[in-house]
Structures are given as C-alpha cells and as structure tokens.
Image (cartoon, rainbow, N blue to C red):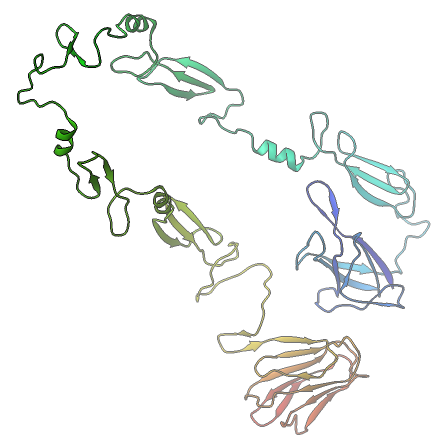
Length: 462
C-alpha cells in the first residue's frame, strides 16, 4: 500500500494557477474499472472518484500496482475530459538503499523531501534553492528584464502598426512632391510622398504665388446702385429695372404667379401653385417616392443572397457585399466539425454517445451501470449490458423483459466483485432460463450472457 500526492494546477499564461476542487478518478491501468483507494494505509476506504480541496493538493493510498489517474472539472474548469496520468506505478517495496545510486543532493539541497515551485522574481530566468524548495523564477519581460511576455504586453505589441499604406519597413519617412493632376499620396520603399501639383485649368492643386497675385488683383466687388437696379451689360453700370430701360416684349419678367402657374408635379412629386411648395412623397409598399433613413438602413442590412459550399474545416459563414456563404464541410479526421453523410466517413477525437446505438443491421449496444440499492428491471430493446456495482452492499434481483423478441441478447455482470456474498438473482419474468425460472450468480465478478430463443432464455456464456 503506497500513498500518492499531487498538486493540480494549470499554466494560465501569467504563471501556475491551482485548480480548486478537482474531480480525481483512479482506474486500473488500461481499463475504465475504478480501483479501491484509501485515505490511509489500507484502513479507511476513500470514494472513487473523489473531489479534491480548494488548495489543489490531493492524495490517496492504493495497493501496489499500475494505475491511470484522471483529473477533471474544478476551478478553473479542466473540462469533462481533463487530463490523465497513465501507467503510474505504486510499489512501496521500492526504495533507495543508503549505499545505492539514488540522488543524495539536488542543487546543493540534501533534504529527503524537496519541492519545485514557480515565481517571477529577478531580471532573467533563474533557479534558486533554499531549505527544501527549488524556485524556478521566470519574470515578466520589460526594458530591464528578460522573461515571459505578459498578456497586457502581448495585446499592446499585437495592436502595433504592421503596415502603412502598404509599406512594412521599420523606419519610414514622409516627403513632399508635385507630380500628378490632383493631390495624392505615393508610397514606395520606405517613403510616403504627398504630391501637391500647382492648380491650373487641367489640374487640381495648390495656388502658385504668381496665380495668387493674379487672382488677388481682380475686382472683388461692384459699388453703386440699389436693390431695384440691375447690372447692365457693356458698361457694367447699375440701372433701374423698369420696362422703359428693359422692354418686356415676349420675354416676360418673373412674377410669383407666372412662375407657379408654369410648374406642375407628377407623383411622387407634389406641387402647390398657391404656395409654390414642391415636395416628394415617402416610398411605401403602395407609393413610389423617396427612401426614408430608417428604410435605407433596413434595406442596406438585408442579405442579397445565401449560398452554401463544403469548404473550410468547421461550420462557418462569410459575408461579402451582402452575399452570405454558409460553409459546412463533411466530417473527417482533419476537420474540426462537419456534417455526417450517408457515405463512409472517418472520425477522430473522443466521442460521447447517449442513448441506444443502432447499427445498419439493427444491432443495439447499451451498457447500464447499476449503482442504486434497488432491484433492476432490464429495459425492452434498451439494455445490452447491465453492470451491477451498488454503492451499498446487498443482494440484487434482476428482472428480464416480460415480452422479449427472438434474438434479444442481455449480459448481466457482477461489476463490484461481491456476488459470492451478495448473490445476483436473474428472474426470467415468466420465461425460463435454461429450463429454470431464475438463474443465480454467486461468485465474484461472475457474469451471464442470455439470448432469447423465442421460448426461453439460453445462457450462452459466463
């Protein structure tokens, strides 16, 4: 009987973090059979699985042998699968003799029990040893210390500018140029040039000093006249606007009444000859007109089309110019997630199935682990294997289905290994078992595989 101690922790990126209250399960190596464990050297039985303390420190005793130790759940959550230490040997007969080849000193420490811990002290990676503790210090990197990159610094560095106008040089410069026919940027090598050509009849740009002087010397305003005058062509003088100075003739002058009478509007344009107001109606399902801001937002957000394909490594979608493409690849070992088809397919990774599995040949396979103290009733077309492993010791009655179908097969197994003292009685429920009304399993780990032949249950193995 040997004791095993573990400290359950994860690396969060900022150093080790204990996992509070992890679930610990000890299996016989290479199986899913939980092993008997103890709180002490073989006296006080311990639950398996059991929940560790908030400190993440767990221990158990077990008989000499090889075990698989699984850690799941807890805080932070390790998940339902967690991680497993496989092939752990427990053998309290193994020891280092006083004259053997074992380690007698580690980094100058000679204590019989020594531990490793992590820290962040110092300005570079270093190991310090004192008393019985070896501390592995990995500080956070800074302008004065070598070390690991903190999450905050990673976010800062990751957000830095990687390219400017297509240039990726570490050192870049700005310059001024005058090429082209309008203001523009030109980026080449490590230089960004702002081109500002001089404005002309064929180019938009900056005003030259010569043009500035020319434009500045032009007349800025006309003086004289009143609000009733007009600027007469030829001599550019202000004259009263009268029919004497400017005969109306066929060129009718502007008046409100004349202007309003000359205009009209056709839906969705509206027009009032009285007020001269011109408007446009708002578009609806029954009316042509202008698009409201709310409707524009609604229409702009609509999807123009939806298509599907089987590209990618998982179910996803992409959107471009309002067109949505849904990607759903077929499941395969290299695909993270995909669809199951009626073709032959291969899968990878652990899969947990619930309910009854039915093959193409209508075969079922379902294992039920019975741990309650009550009797067991075999479900019609539901239970293939019933493993009896009751939490409270006691005899168990297993009742077969009342109306089985020819070819139905059920296996009853003493999974706890105590049937010699706590018999398992299998009742045929009105159907004989090898000519008897019932069958008794009375040896540890005994099992019986029964097949219904249309009249009675035949025991074919066990």
